[in-house]
Length: 98
Image (cartoon, rainbow, N blue to C red; front, side, top):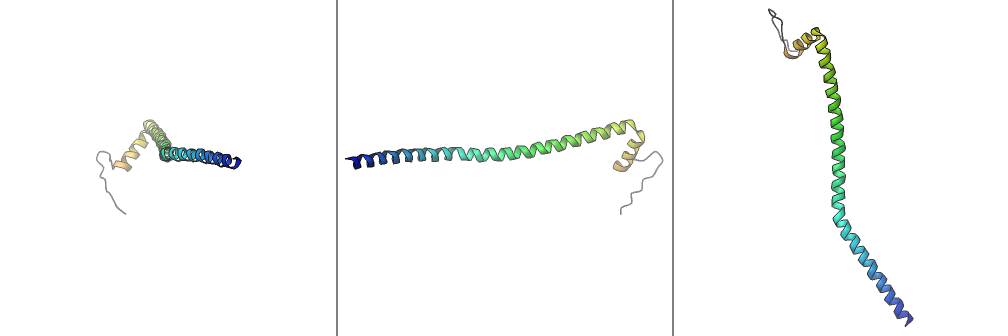
């Protein structure tokens, strides 16, 4: 009799362990795709935050340049000549390509 109870107890333990394993597998099947997606989204978020920081720095640099141009009319003229090929009245612009 004692041996039979031991086998019955082992069977119950094995049954409980199997149920726990099945529940764990089901949980992982439902949870893992969401975890992988969350990880990808966090990486994309970090990349976008980095781009935001770079663009904010570029905006600050451009605002500083705008302030400099507003303060110095000669710089305004220089930038107009270099970037858009502007010329004073009576001047002739000759574009030489190298």
